Amino acid sequence: MNDSRSPRDRVGRVVRDLPRSGIRDFFELVAARDNVISLGVGEPDFATPWRVREATIFALEHGATSYSSNLGLPQLRRAISSYVKRRTGVEYDPKTEILVTVGVSEALDLAMRALLEPGDEALYHEPSYVSYNPVIRLAGGTPVAVETGSEHGFRVTRARLEECTGERTRLLLLNYPNNPTGAALEPADVAEIAAFARERDLLVLSDEIYGELTYDRDHCSLISQPGMKERTVYLHGMSKAWSMTGYRLGFACAPAELIEAMMKIHQYTMLCAPTPSQKGAIEALENGDEDVESMRAEYRRRRNVMHSRFEAMGLPCMRPDGAFYMMPWIGDTGMTSKEFAVRLLEEKDVAVVPGTAFGECGEGYVRCCFAASMDHIRAALERIEAFLASEKVSQ
Image (cartoon, rainbow, N blue to C red; front, side, top):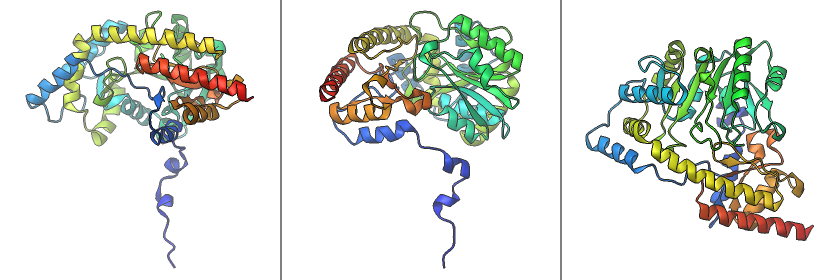
């Protein structure tokens, strides 16, 4: 009799109990179909700016194929320090307060594992990027969702934070401008959250990867608030604003003691970020402002077109202030967000993401990404309008 454990039983409990990503499951359906117009993937349709690609090619041609320091290339850390100071007014020491990572996702994971003790509670807001809850759990922490809604423009409020904070709360994770809602914090929101963090002695992880993609006002960073540099891990990366998703290049800025703790994990796992990607990132940060501005102007144009069409279709939708996502309300169709997304895919070959992939309070919404080309956006909107019309006829 063979009584050995099954392969499934050998998987650690925390991982075994993790649900699969709702986005991943849905896009397996998408991958099985041809001619789908996708508004689902959060990836710019622009190629990486030529100056960045050229710098990367030049680096490869000159043999930049070795490991870098665990912290990242010194020249890149200096470029990050200058860029962050120019954008936020806050200066970080490139020798001790900056860590270059394999995308922002790695920086987030490192921060969670370095800072959480088993049982510590970490607040995060929902709807949220799909990784936040699992990353907290994988680090041994307890995720506590702070629900946000359209009544507050999907911005987290101090009142909701107060309700969700307990004796074991150690950390607050923020992402503004936000994936999936496109919400951005106003200066008064940032000041209020900063005051709350200081009073409750919370460490804040601020994922500001969409900071450059703010459309109607300047981005207000949490680290610019009094006393917040000392209690914030500032997370950023090159994927979105510079259209460098495949480079997998992110970074974290924080007090030296926190960066040292994160670097310990980084050196035993990733070792360092890819050197050619780091060379490209230097060029992007030092000379890429015009490229970012050009792409931001195009995203703003696409946002306005998509928002106007959703409103005209009778799908209420907050006009996003940042990132490149919007969440139209489809609850009045009588379908759940998953039913809506699956039927839209099967009947009109348009892919959107069910709002529940980003937390339970995403029910009634679907996420649509306007980083697709304008031609694809217009075609997708035509199909969505036809889908809604056919649905009304069939009722």
